[in-house]
Image (cartoon, rainbow, N blue to C red; front, side, top):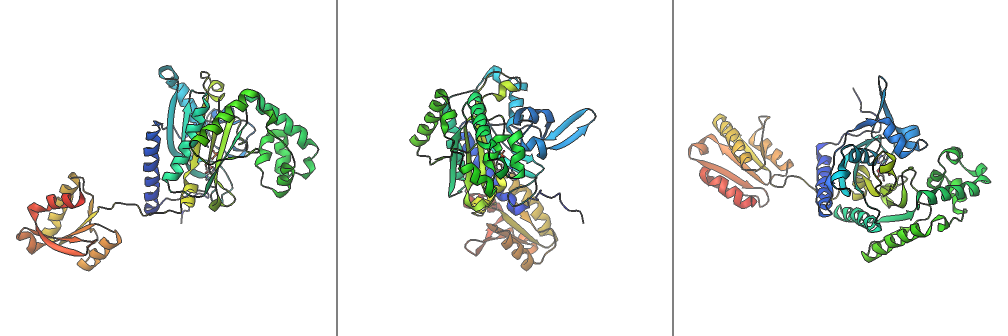
Length: 416
Ligand code: AMP
């Protein structure tokens, strides 16, 4: 038997209903905030990610799915931001309106060691607002993430925020870390020893007990922030306070990617275990320029759909609540069923029938399993008299209705 690739999942029809619902809710909320959908390819030139995420990041070093094609090296996208910035520049979107707000859904690929909440193909729901340095935009983006979680009925999440400051401030922070960690290297785990040389900020994300001890003793405050960066962050916090959004300033929250500057945030949930981030994001004010575009401050975030569904506990039963099930008893009745199905669908009423030659009892069981709203039972004799039996599955009552009356009656009861 062929098996799926480790770290990938089949989303079966029952679960797919939850995915549809999440997407539908997201679209509604993104639209409220005037974000527009963008769809970019799943494959990009690998250099896009090397340049944007950074050569020394874990994603670029270890987690990219690479495809070699003659002289070209492609990568399955590990995240959405870089692709969207590429699309913004390549399609000259800044020429018509520099400030743009995008949202997106779709699969991302990272060659990780699979575990609960950590997959090799996972899905993001995310957004990017490109073309503004205004701290109020940071507030809007965090408020949007909060609105999405509320609309998904996710409870007990925590929004952690921090500021990395400008590129210059960030370099200062790196230098500070270098100075403080140099004498403590021997106490760090093997990965962090490598991170010390390659990507020192990542040490602050390490979950190893010894590393956590070292980190908690570092005593780094926000003195690496210049006055403008401090002012930016104060305005973000004041904006969140004004909207009564709960957040926690988390000094060592750094996010490992090179492109982040100023506000960074992460949303965590207690039900997720070791992989506790539901979503994360931040500002990336230099990336558009870095990739060949104009000077354009930007901010975005992404939620992991699989983790949202764990946190949400797949609450609520979604599905087609107004499905109608047709049962034809006899050859002519079955033929009539096919015509009636077509007529119902033309009237935007969703319906289905039995294709397995079930008995009346079997077909009714099937209708029950499908949780349909109405069943139409059509027999050859009744059909000759122009009569159809309409069974209301909510009230468990049934009545005989005239063929000509059926459509009007159904529309009335389904309110469509
Ligand atoms: P990141 O781009 O790493 O900041 O990820 C944003 C969000 O995507 C995370 O908070 C997770 O919810 C989700 N995510 C990232 N990596 C994975 C993964 N390997 N498997 C499942 N979800 C992931």
